[in-house]
Length: 391
Image (tube, rainbow, N blue to C red):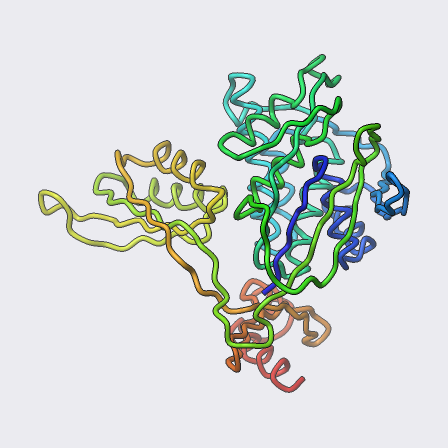
């Protein structure tokens, strides 16, 4: 089981998070090619070593052609992602992060999320940071993300909305209900994008962690502070890989009964819950009050998304109450491999628990390959299993 720990000493930004993940072993050229294809803009990422208070740190350098559409709204970005050939996990995590940013901005500016139209999430650098981090987390096969408290500075920052106080209003709104630490340093330590990445991915904010340290890296941003080094320390840990320990994490399980919604509305609710980050949503049929046919909705979700999931349920369903419980989840350790089938790539998930091992080709890949070669999706599926078992 792989755990990623953000040890936040002086803040976090999107480029610092991406630089850290690249430094942990993700190929920046591969991310550059993926982002260039996604945006139709030539993007070249590289990591440069610089000194911060006598500590060697990695600075992300971004070279792009001019972005002719700097202003995009949330739907523009969702369309770009959903039309891409990125893995569903990467698409969903990226959309979840952009949703968090958009909801914060909409609340601050008193407008609907659909009408939020601002440069912070539309700018190419935010797309690079958010999609790049989502892709890197998936590539590194991270099972759990933990973090220390976000750190905030003071002062003001110049934006396209004018001069704003620090922490920026969007940053503060995103970190609502999360323990933070404000220090006496003038400057923007945690950016809205950095805060959104934390909110979307961190299961728990705490100072403790355990496991075998695989690697630690220091990343930095373009700002430099006199009082403290502008550093983010990121630690990769592994546990349970050589024994039969349970690979567990704590999650919330939410359920509610609904007897007065149409099938179309229930389908829309399910899509919304998954888009904001629910791990899984299932419907089962039963009989409820007054002998009415009833749908029981069960949702499992990470700790950090409880508030947004509750809000989504109340906004898009007719229910007036929900049940919440904290449960332990046992998951198999998972890895991904890419196999070649007649010149076509298929992602295969490898699940392990002690001496138990299972393989599961990605069904969407099997469907895509079946359209290219003269085989059905199920034939492609079993052919992929045969290839991985013989390796």
